[in-house]
Length: 184
Image (cartoon, rainbow, N blue to C red; front, side, top):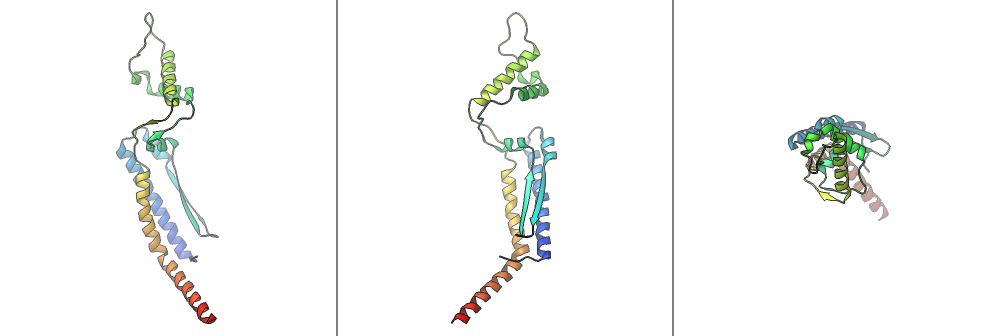
């Protein structure tokens, strides 16, 4: 295993920092281009963190964002149970009844109350979602951008650490050759 000096470890941290910033910039740009709704909260929640364990020379970068960002990136959704009605009622309240169109089953003699209409919409959505998995049009914003960035990270890390790894390999090969020649 290669033994990295402080300058190489600093270079790795700088490459990781640049990778984190560039990846977040590209992800935010991709979110804007895909036309996803309610993206301000998703964009504000995006963050990354890098950690270094000097004992075992491990460097990690973690990315985080709101859960619904992953929902937008998925093609197939599987619901094992019915979603909570109160969350759906809150969402319908924010969206407004006019967003759901005209009532398909109005009462004949008197109009339904808004609370009754919201409840019917929430239960209809919940029953549809709990009926199994369904396909949806996904908005590709994470996987394609993130994994495209990894190639650049790999090249940068090879450039930064290549010299140390090559020197370590040379030393290892020389040591093996010397031990073999000593045994002969």
